[in-house]
Image (cartoon, rainbow, N blue to C red):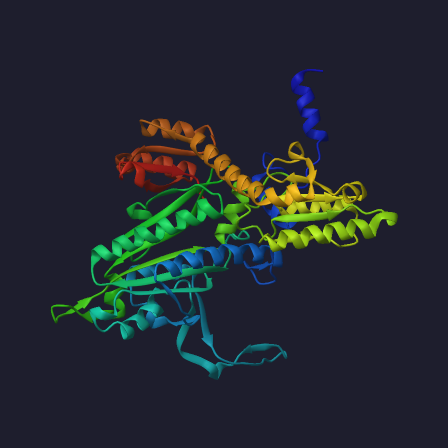
Length: 493
């Protein structure tokens, strides 16, 4: 038997929690991880999802971390209506054009029984003006800003809302692209263009910190090209993250809207000179797509791997019980759980009646950063057996309970750091700089994994448009590190 045949047999005989594997079918593997980790499922409503408690706990941790950073910048949370009058949406022509094909429209306000006994919209309940279920809230928040900002003394006006939005997507995938999704959208108004530009960059930096420090996802901050810019914005900024299949995920956006929305919404104020001026506004947002990015960055063929700082649980404690030793084992597990909780850790003590191997696999598939096993021997000796999810079996360690309790937070910190470094190394190793459009063509023709970086001037060449169409690639951003001279090209979600 050759070495190659042995490798094939080993792969065939190896068992993973998720099938197909990443290498076999990345899109199906992605869906398999979500199912294995019990994070979400498809809803009975077309294109929507049900976020299950474990997935929602992750989103809450992301939300909490970001909300703290947003509030630290003097932004206040508020809430605005789900239904936006069609006339509001129509105020900004470029904005309307960008969202028109994705809008869900409410046209009636009452149902009645139809000829067949089924419920139908009552003909006499047709609304004089239809409402659009918010695809984004620039126009309706702008209407309030126009009332609240009368003088330069009322500025800056910084608002954020956590809400859901609806965009009628044709091809959906849980967390990445659904018709309804959760997000935050910030909307700020300023006296000057300089303040607005600085704000757009500053909020992007907050997103970068969230992704790197909390989600352990390295990204490429930069500016969107003109044809990828948000409808109605003067300039759009983004963080593009590379997933394990080499595709780009637009992790977030921050937009300098100039005076475009201020003009259409009437956001004006009396300036320091006594004259009336239009405000300069920004908008910025991050959605549950970040959860999809987390999965595609860190998960493996056994399921999810959670970065500790956002993980629903830091530690899963698995009692290994036989009938004769159950009481002592459970006592040891409970004592450790309480001790870890007192130190600020989020702990899952699995007291279900499932088999021990099933409990272990559940913790693995859910990506709990550390798994602790306590059986009769550990209970008698005052020890624990612990395993890191990011490393697996090779990290299996037995130590005293007091030693583990003292170093648990340090281990979690190391896991967080390791996940970021691993993802950063992957990204850096899969960005390929080319000197010509022909080299870019050859890269994508070979179906290689990763991004191409090239001179931004090549975007204007007719040959690039052919590459774009032939391989379904787009300019992701002009990285800040290259001061707009280079552009990142890649396939995207």
